[in-house]
Length: 116
Image (spheres, rainbow, N blue to C red):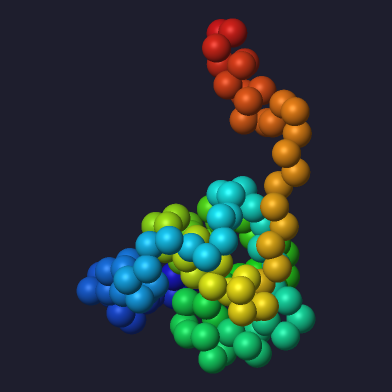
């Protein structure tokens, strides 16, 4: 888990159990969107569950992308998306969506690769 901790639940906990069977988030969140813990988020996350507390702690010092959160928790992206969406709804996290540019970085990389 976060910072080298072992998850005491081991491999027995399936992703759907972490999200209580839900697979669809309450908010659409881009993989590169940044999350930051709100001022009262750590306190509120203590009552939200272990995974949400880990996410709140992870996003306290600096914003983290959805991809970074999933990697740090070692959970599938969809699971992280559901957990983060719940935390946004609860006011634990604030969401900073990426700004849509005319030529996004990924589009420029793709064009560059095609030109090779």
